[in-house]
Length: 73
Image (cartoon, rainbow, N blue to C red; front, side):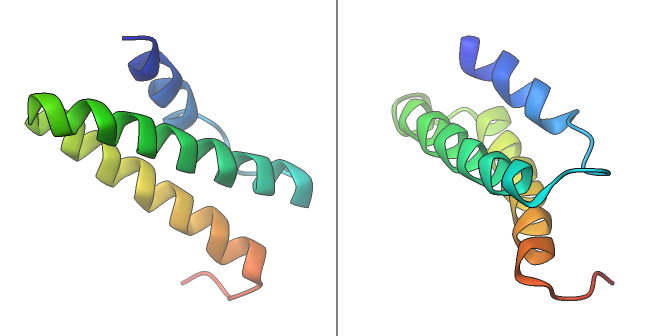
């Protein structure tokens, strides 16, 4: 359940005033969290874990979009 606490902390992370290195680290942290949650999901097939992974992926994509310099819509 430590993963859930980390995921919750990541979801509540403010994206404003982040430096580029902070964004890179946040993206890597998100990837590690998603992969770890996926391992648990494979065993339990818990629907809540899947929705958590989707929310984390969505936030990770927003961070990566900002890193690549694409304008946010």
